[in-house]
Length: 155
Image (tube, rainbow, N blue to C red; front, side):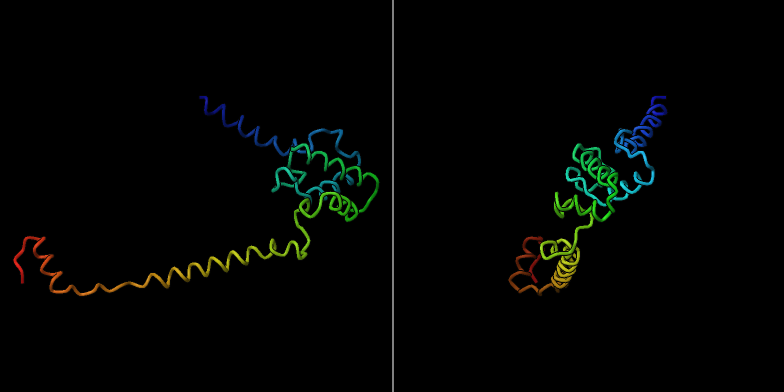
């Protein structure tokens, strides 16, 4: 019985999480087109607390502040790229979910290829070492000792 009550409560709690991201209606823009533009821009910006969520998906205080900044810029009529540039200039490359390719970020962009190559080389090296070894023949002294330990007469 308790299990049947628990499942709907759990589903309700999971469903309400994304709705709380821009939870305060006062933070939303009155113009639906501007609000949608702000949400699109917000999906391109990283929450620096959560790090793998956009500011639109995060409920951290810093994400809330960044959402307000974005909405202020959009309400002033600035184009999307100007809003992104404004936030980028203040917070750096890390605030962008898709950082630009520069010499400083080259290792980040190349890391998947480096990891894949390193893994392939590691597997190749392990396969070379796994050559089946043929058992060596026993010497006469080893055969005698084995027979002695087994309790059999010597050959």
